[in-house]
Length: 352
Image 1 (cartoon, rainbow, N blue to C red):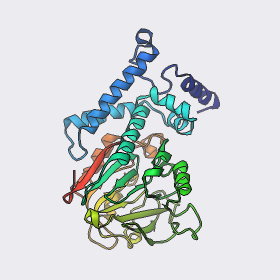
Image 2 (tube, rainbow, N blue to C red):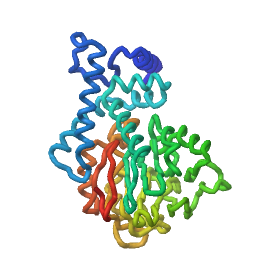
Image 3 (cartoon, rainbow, N blue to C red):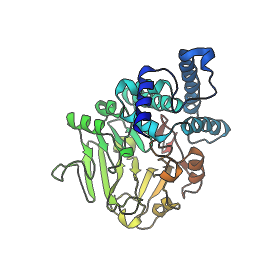
Image 4 (cartoon, one colour):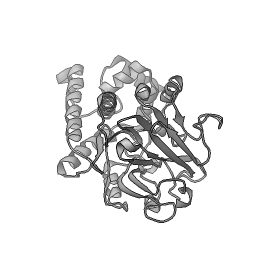
C-alpha cells in the first residue's frame, strides 16, 4: 500500500466516517446514516459471535459450518495491509477501526471474551480451561496458575497481570507481541523463548531445556521452521500442568517443521497438541505416532488459521474451509478447528 492510501485509512478511522477498505457494499449509508451502519454492523457481528460461542469446535454440524462461513466472509473483505495498519495504529485509531470493520470487530470481541474468562473463571480441581485468542495464541488456566503461548494480538499487553508466564515459540510477529513481553518483564514474570535475552537469562534457551514454574513442568526442544533456511528457529513446548489437573499435558509446536529427530526432549504422550497448518504437504503427521520423536495426542487443535496479516493462501492465510478439510486428514481421530474466543475445558480426561 502506498503512503497516500495509508494516510487515507488513518484519517478515515480517526474521523470514524464510515467503512474504508473492508466495508460492506450491501449497507445503504444514505438511508440509515453512519451511526446506523455501526449499530447494524455491531448487531450482526455480535449475533454471529454468539452463534459461534454457543456451538462447540468439537461438533462440526450445519449450524457451526454456516457460522464459520459467515466469519470467513468477514475476513475475505479485510486486506492484510489494512489489518496491519490496525495493528500498528494509535490506540484511538485502532479502536475506531474496530467499529467499522466486521472481522476486526469480531477480533476485538473475541479478545474481550477471553480476557473476561481469564480474569473471572474459577477452575475446578482436576480441570483445565483453554482459550484460543488468535492465530496460534492460546491461554491455559489451571486451578493453580495460568500461562499463555504465542500471543499475537493488538491488545495483548492487557493479559500480563493475569498470566504467570509466557511462552514464545519464535521471532515472527504473528507469534508474539512486544508490548505484552515488556509488560511481563516489568512485572518480573518469566518469558520463555530462544531469542529474547542472552542465555544468562534463565528462560532463554537456544537448545533443549527443562523448566519448572510453580506446578508446571515444561520441556522444550529446538526445531527448524517450516520455511527453508530457518534452522533451529522454533522452540516446541510440552507442558505438564501439574497434579491438580491430573497431570494434563499441553504441547504447542509453533511453526515447527515437524522433524521427529528434533522432538526427542518432549513428552511422548500429550492430551492436547497444537500444530500449525503447515504450508508443506501434510507434514503435521510426521510427528504423530509411537516412534522416536513422535507423540500420541488425545486431541489435536489445528491452528494458524485466518492470520489476517498474511496476504492470502500463498502466504499461509488459511481459510476455515481449508482448515476443516486439513483437519480431516490429520492422523488423530479427535482433530478439530477452534476459532477465536472459544473456550474448551479439559475434564474427566476429555475436552468439553
